[in-house]
Amino acid sequence: MIKESKKFGIAIHGGAGTIVRELLTPEREQAYLAALEQALNTSYTLLEKGGSAMDAVEKAVRSLEDSPLFNAGRGSVFTADGTHEMDASIMDGATRQAGAAAGVTGVRNPIMLARHIMEHSSHIILAGQGAERFAKQQGLQFEAEEYFFVKQRYDQWQQVKGSDTTALDHSEDRKFGTVGAVALDVHGNMAAATSTGGMTNKQFGRVGDSPIIGAGTWADNNTCAISCTGDGEYFIRAVAAYDVACLMEYKGLSLEAACDEVVMNKLRTAGGEGGLIGIDKEGSIVLCFNTLGMYRGMRDSSGQQKTAIFK
Ligand code: ASP
Image (cartoon, rainbow, N blue to C red; front, side, top):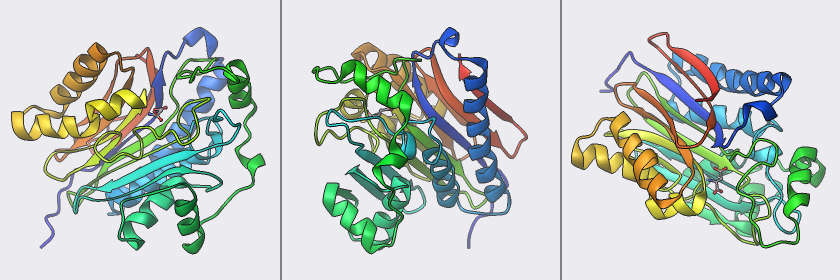
């Protein structure tokens, strides 16, 4: 028998970083908030109708991938070779099944590919050309190079092109623009999804934390669902998303205390900039970051709703 719980909710992020208010025009700020609200509201409506947490997180991430504002899907940053290599993952807290795609080019919605890998292959992570072949077999939509050309991203790349610098930041607002979503549905199931273009000027084949289950994404009905954004190399070594779940499971910490420990203490001490969003089985939502800002939003069945960028 499925235990029906009334509480449900969703949280999303569009990246964290040194987002400087003065560098963000009011128009751009409004555009970011509107894109976040749109992603939040469509997934909230789905959850309200009894839809699954998996469908809600996939839908929210797809909506952010389709926006040129975020570093995922269409708005993905440029690699050192001037291409786009995207990473994404999704995890179902009810079954602890997961799927991920790493270093894929041309796929319109890498989060859909991650879900197809989870549901229609016997593997968890597919990378590069193999993942693209699988995406074609599954009939997923591909886009031409022009679709992924966003002037602002191109200009960011021009500033570091030819150097060894992997730009962690936006030149305009110095942020990480990865997108993610976590949700709890009325059936008591949780899910998490994360999608990214990675880091500007990244070297061939570089894979960040976003497609690594446990590092950038985690969901487990016993504890929480987590999606991370930030300096991927640090999040991988911190096993950040799973560490939050572990602190809850083994130390009995609340979601808030666990997120705080990982983001504000462990990652910050190590030099890892970024943040994460989390939801637990009670529907508590945490939006936590050690940077100046994080594009973020949440909405839950108790009527709480917000979108924000700065602290
Ligand atoms: N975590 C991502 C990566 O390292 C970057 C980001 O969050 O924007 O690939």
